[in-house]
Image (cartoon, rainbow, N blue to C red):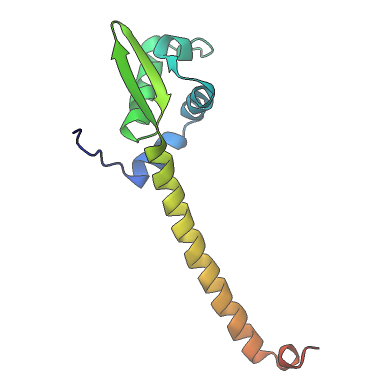
Length: 116
C-alpha cells in the first residue's frame, strides 16, 4: 500500500499562481502527455518545463509515471480537491457572516419588519 501524500494549500495556490503551470494543467486536462510534448508550445528549455511539472507534482495537481525514458504527466485531483475544500470553507464562513449582518440590519430597520 502506497503512503498517503500530504499536500498543502499553500503549495497548491503557489503552483496555480504561475501562468505557465496553469497552461500545463489546461493541456493535461485534455489528455495525459509527456514532458517533451508539454514543452513544445513554450519558449523555454525542457529542464524548465520539468521544473514546472515538479512544482505541480509536489502540490498534488499532477502525477507522473516513468516508463523507460518517457515521463508521462496526468492530472491529479488531490490538489484541486484541497483548493476546492479551502475555498468552500471560506465561502461558508463569509456567507454566515453576511447572513448575520443582514439579520442585524433588519433588526435596526423598522420598515423591514413591517414589509414596507
